[in-house]
Amino acid sequence: MNLFREMTINDYEQMIELWNGIEGLALSNADSKENIEFYLQRNSGLSYVCEQDNKIVGTILCGHDGRRGFIYHVSVNPDYRKQGIANKLVQKSLDQLNKAGIDKCHIFVIEDNLVGNAFWSSSGWEKRSGFFVYSRNTR
Image (cartoon, rainbow, N blue to C red):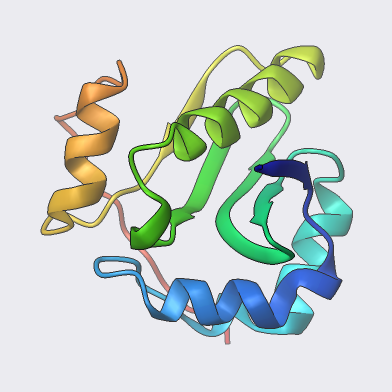
């Protein structure tokens, strides 16, 4: 039986282990425990985990900037895929964004992440084109 609940910083060790095992999911310094804790506090009630047998098997990080929602690190342990876990996690976050008055959400997917791109394309998300994402460290 799957249990879906709000993500807390106490989930960090299991989450980072899951994320490290997901092909195509890129981690950075932004995924440190301190940064994830700050993100969860700033975006309370928007990120979720799925547990089965007291083990985290799925995650979604979600937040917004007041205008648009952003989803990160949607991941499901490969042994638990094809059960609708990712779709349920996404819907929970989208419902909460909607309650917060946010009517559009984005996700950044690495170009060569075949599994991720197939999931988002088959889930009714529109692949955008015509712009580039630029990044820069602030330090």
